[in-house]
Amino acid sequence: MKLSIQYGDKTIEFDVLYRNRKTLAVQIQPVDKILVLSPKGLSKEIIKEKVKSKSKWIIKKLLDFKDIGYLPLNREFVNGEAFMYLGRRKWLRDFGVRMEL
Image 1 (cartoon, rainbow, N blue to C red):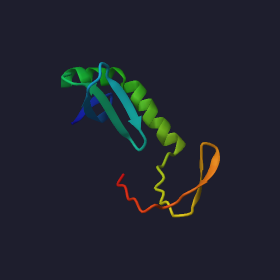
Image 2: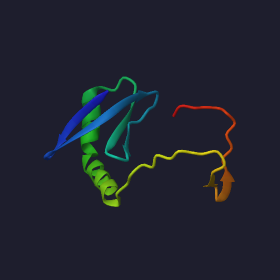
Image 3: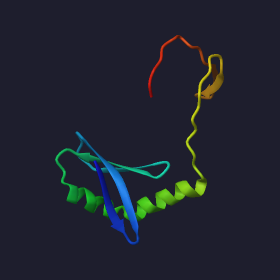
Image 4: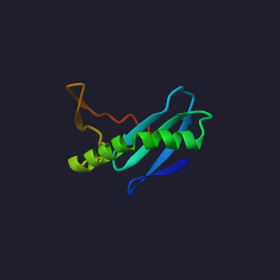
C-alpha cells in the first residue's frame, strides 16, 4: 500500500508492508525508495504519525544517497567469470539452473 505525508515543502511517499511483527521499521533503500514494515492491524493514521516523526531522518538519508551518487549495479554473470566472495576469488560455474530475481 502506498501512503504519503507532507514535511515542510516536501512530500514523502512510502510503501507499507504489513508483517507479523511487534514494531514499526522504516527502511531507506537506494534510489529514493522508502519502505515501512508495520505490524498487522496498525492504522494508516498511526503509521503516518510515526513516519512524520522520523521525517527529518528520512530526508537526511535520501540526501546522503544523492550526495554519494549511489547507482545500483546491474551485473550479468557469465560462466567462468571470477569474482570475490568472502575475501577469496571464486569462479562461477553454470549448472543449468535458472532463477528469476
